[in-house]
Length: 182
Image (cartoon, rainbow, N blue to C red; front, top):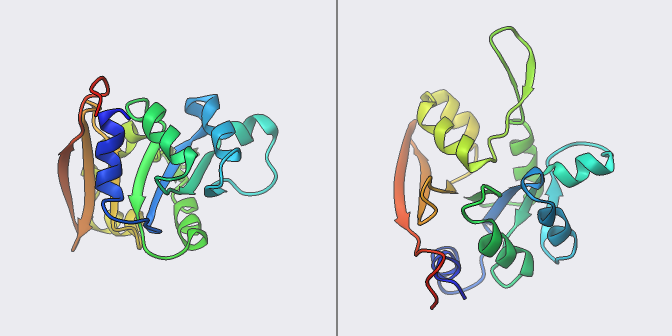
């Protein structure tokens, strides 16, 4: 097991299985994401509504309740860490409630009033966006979410973003290099 896989397992699941750890994965980043997801037992839902054209279904964002013992989670950490496959988050409550909240963040308006898709589930976007948010924006983005976790620009680091009383708290957790073996 590579050391970054072990480090993330120890961070998210130190003693026992948890039901409050999720990932939002971006199917557009790699074709393996969708095929690994449909071939797993992971509890997952698409963030897009309705029946999707197959190409969009492959490229859509999915909310996944992650469990280290599931092969999808292991693939996500092993193959996707450092490749911007998605972000992790911690949130109590069920997947449907979280899905509804996350769906509300998918569309934004630009200065001209045009509706755009907001790809906040891309770690490069989220880690740049959250520090720019005002207190009301943070409350909107977080809802019941306790923490967001992204790979850093350096994949040997994980960034932890928490919202507390209108302020964004950011910390960095070292993740061992991918080439080291444990």
